[in-house]
Length: 116
Image (cartoon, rainbow, N blue to C red; front, side, top):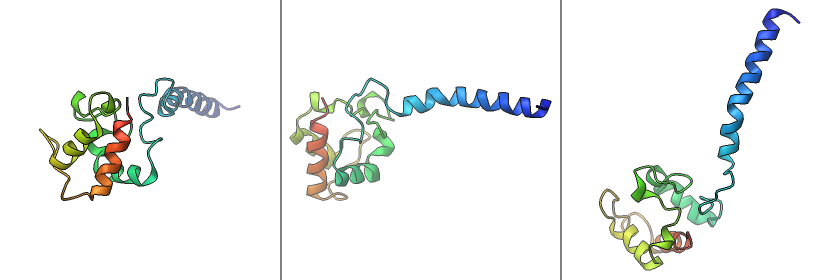
C-alpha cells in the first residue's frame, strides 16, 4: 500500500472514531427524558416542529435556557396550564392562540402533560 493510501486509511479511521460517539448520542443513549418527539402523535409532532422546535429543541431540551426545557413539563404543569401557556404566552414566549387552532393547542398540551 502506498504512503498516500496509508494516510487516507488512517484519516478515515480517525474520522469514524470521532463520529461514532456523536452518532450514538444522537440515538438517544440510555437516559430518555420523555422520548423527545418519538412518542408524539404525527399531527402533534408536525405542529411542534413547525412552531416550537426553534426554542424548545428537537428533544424538548430547551434552547433558550432551563425554563424552555419541556422534557418533564407534565410534572410541573397540568394540561390546562399548558393550554393557557401556549395560548397566552409568557415572558419571551409569544402567544399562539391566533396562530394555532384549539385542536392543535389541545393536542400539544395533552402530549406535553404526559412528560413527567
